[in-house]
Amino acid sequence: MIKAQLVRSFTHAALSPDPDLAVAALMIARIEYPCLDAGPYLDRIDAIVREAKRRVDAAREAPGDAPPRADPDDYARVMALNEYLFGELRFVGNSVTYEDPRNSFLNEVLDRRTGIPITLAMVYMEVARRAGVRVEGVNFPGHFLLRCPARRGLAQTDDLIIDAFHGGALLSEDACRRLRRHAGEEDGPDSPLLVHATKPQILARMLLNLKRLYVQMCSFPQALDVTELLRAVDPSAINELRDRGLLAYNLRDFSSALRDLQAYLELSGSTQLDEDDRADHAQIWEHVKTLRRRVAALN
Image (cartoon, rainbow, N blue to C red; front, side, top):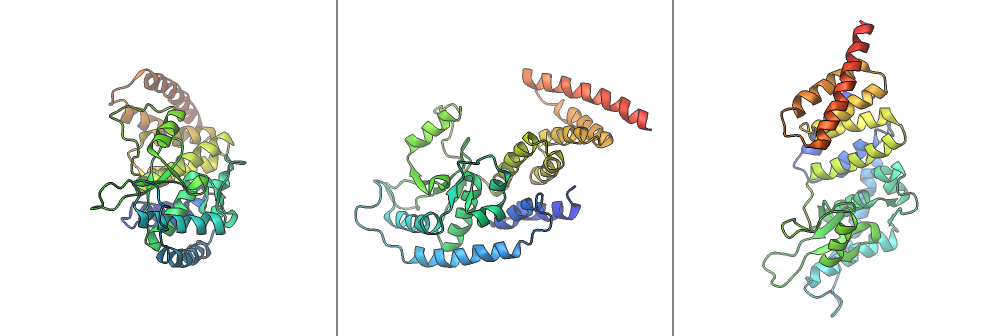
């Protein structure tokens, strides 16, 4: 099981105002690789940044290249970054084995130069920020995206929306709306299209994806470790308390399972419940009654 010191270190890294994502992401990788030395991977990112900065600083926009309403300078810098990361270093989206857990570990993404949208976006963000290109994560449904915001004071300019999974492709708003509908999200007039992702939200999204994969693989000890890190990122996430209890139940740690599931029922019972939540509560309550009998028998 995950060490308490790693949880504390991850909590500090995840909630720190420092925008660095790589350190926390490499801590996540220690779920699968407990002895991972982060140093060489941070050094590799530094080397990529040095060359990327040289390319970005030298970037010049050719007349007519930039899309309408795009800032030509931002476009030129993003294209220079795209050419280096995806053209020369050959980072690429792993569409063949998308569900491979290695796609969620930053060390593996750097070694194999392939990953899923959020991990490739993380590499892009880390390199762009330090190379002088302002890029932020977008918590888009089903497919994590990036945005290079238009600079303030420039009239008639649009943000650049970047898809790191598809080689840094630039997406229009219409393309984003189609993607959102494909993901099953309603495209209402009051729902914002592109929502900025904070550092904790990015890490939580990585962890949720990883937990889903581990559960599918019945790798319950690793899934339990992931819930510990999710609780560190957001202690108020009571669903993670429920999932930690259910995972402990699967691992026959009945005392821990009973503690977490009882706490989940107490905390969630004070909120307004819809039909699905009531069904979930009923099922968890049955688990709690079974666990009470098991724990009593063990004592």
